[in-house]
Length: 445
Ligand SMILES: *[C@@H]1O[C@H](CO)[C@@H](O)[C@H](O)[C@H]1NC(C)=O
Ligand SMILES: *[C@@H]1O[C@H](CO)[C@@H](O)[C@H](O)[C@H]1NC(C)=O
Ligand SMILES: *[C@@H]1O[C@H](CO)[C@@H](O)[C@H](O)[C@H]1NC(C)=O
Image 1 (cartoon, helix red, strand yellow):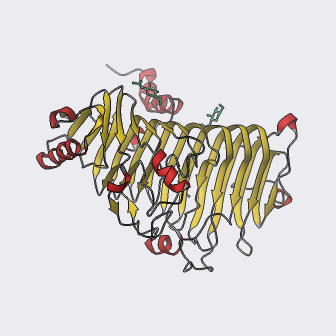
Image 2 (image 1 turned 135 degrees about the vertical axis):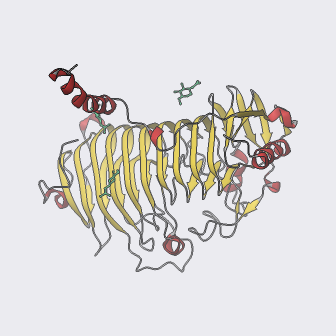
Image 3 (image 1 turned 135 degrees about the horizontal axis):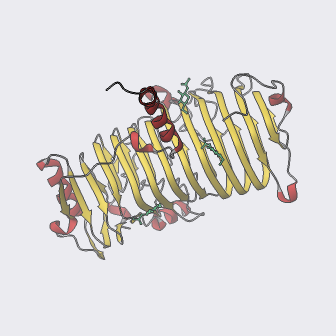
């Protein structure tokens, strides 16, 4: 049978139609690291764990993970954590495993800080982030591993950070506080459907990693808890964060890449970072880049973000001595309600690891597009402060409307910057108005 004209046409069009139907479904991280079923399932109770909130389960976790690591079952192993409160010291994960938290499962960090292990500082930081020297090991951590999933039915990983925050407040810390979760030199990581709360320090810290997906997570810490950043992709590539609700005491998401001379020497950028469908609240920044950007940060896409009761909505921050670059950053569709400052891009933020930083290590900031931003109850719409003799370039603000209380708003402030502004209210500053329209800045999506 000779195929009809219509069916030939249909065959030719079908791939196009399929593409269209793909394009209308929501963008998703799932192509970065596909979700995977494990062949084998073991339970933490098989190793003598007791979920009474009092028994210390460090040893059962160690034994279970040792078994996964050494039996190396094909398709990997799922470690099931049933409902209950499972107190433990720091847990080191291994490759090809899923840590699965059932509904009602809480993995709680011991508050015995004196016995918390210490590890070396990160080479790109040269020292602990808050104190010189070594740093405490992260609560749930993986080093040099791959194919790891932390998931379940929205169980909780609780850092019980209060004791650490109080040590910080009393200035009685000797080393940098532990992160709640850290993956280092690792790849193919998925973190999904877990609640993270009360981290001693940063919550989720992928560093020197590639292919990391973090989705459907809730991250909570009190607004007055010190340095409890939500998610900090650091010197990592292909990190995709979506459908996250974060409310903490510091930046909700902060993309980083090392600190001054140490970060410059290590030279590992963060690139290919996607952040989408994020909602939350912070006394500091909603979405931040920096201030540690010494290895460079590039190719970042942020879309569909909803912020309320927040210090600074979008904050790109670096400093003299950082070196590195921040380039090709796109932020689209952000709504803000009750924020102190909508947008801040600044070249004078953040402290230095020591006095050996190089004052000639000037960071470059180029190609930042911020589009479709809508805010109410914004005290100050924004400021862009470049670096003298090294202005920030190709900064594009398009369709940015940030209203103060009763529609009154303080003016924008800009210095040492060039770029363009289209449809920005209140009107930003003459430095951005000089180029009316140009290739890199338009109102199109
Ligand atoms: C877990 O929480 C996410 C929101 O973060 C929600 O979308 C999902 O339906 C929840 N899953 C279960 C099994 O309750
Ligand atoms: C800029 O970043 C986006 C991701 O946001 C990426 O798709 C694009 O390829 C990058 N452009 C260049 C020139 O690298
Ligand atoms: C931004 O929001 C508009 C309106 O809700 C939507 O049509 C558009 O697809 C969104 N853009 C992105 C990049 O998600």
